[in-house]
Each structure stands twice: as C-alpha cells, then as structure tokens.
Image (cartoon, rainbow, N blue to C red; front, side, top):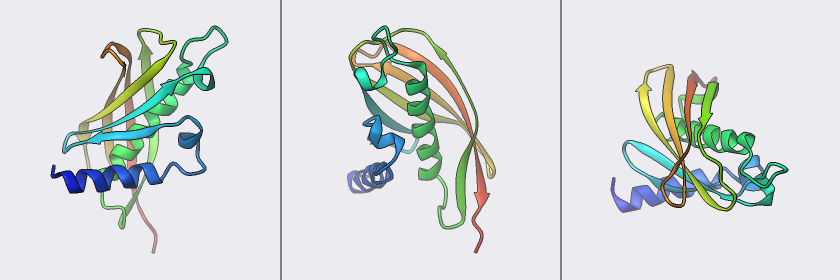
Length: 142
C-alpha cells in the first residue's frame, strides 16, 4: 500500500473518533495494509478494573472498534454501511500500564458478512486477548 493512501486511510479512521467512545478511550489507528488495520489504546486508570488491570470490556471496545473500521476500509461506503453481529474473545494475560495494540485481519470478506480475527498485544508483543468479530454490510438507502 502506498504511503499517501495509507496516511489518508488512517486519518479518515481517526476522524471518526470525535465525540465517541473511541475518543473517550483514546483509541488511535496507527497502521493499515492490504491485509490488516491496527489501533492502539493506552492502559491507564480510564480503562482499569478496580484492581488496576485492563478491563475486559475496554478490550472488547477496542476489538469492536478496530474490527468495524477494518470492515469500513475494505467496502464501498457509498453503497454499504457496517454493523457488528457477534464478538467473542479470550483474555489470556493482564496488563497494568503502557499501550495495547489491536490488529484486525480478515478471515472471510464476503459480500454480506465479514469475519475478523483480532489480536490484542501489549508493548512487548505479548498476546493479551484473541477475538473473533463478525460484521455485516448492509446496503445504504437512497
């Protein structure tokens, strides 16, 4: 993917965050290619459980965000809109601080449904959570 197009896609993805949960959680899109979309989220008191580790709900918000935006990147937004259908995740390791990075890769890009695998890793590349996210693309009404 050429650098100019990559920059445009990331700027567009990040522009959707204004006045949303994504802005509240400081989720930022940091990388994109033909095969994946990657976002980061800081791990701090805003996303902690009471015992000071990353909340699984915050992790799932990150997962759904990167999965949904990945679907947006790879469809024609003039003809379709995307909604999440199903999400499941296994939380494998805890994190107290730093950043987590979610990378969405397509398992299936169908005309109507898309299946995404999303890996959430910490700053050191340790696998924190592994998720599966299904989206649906529905035609826009004119």
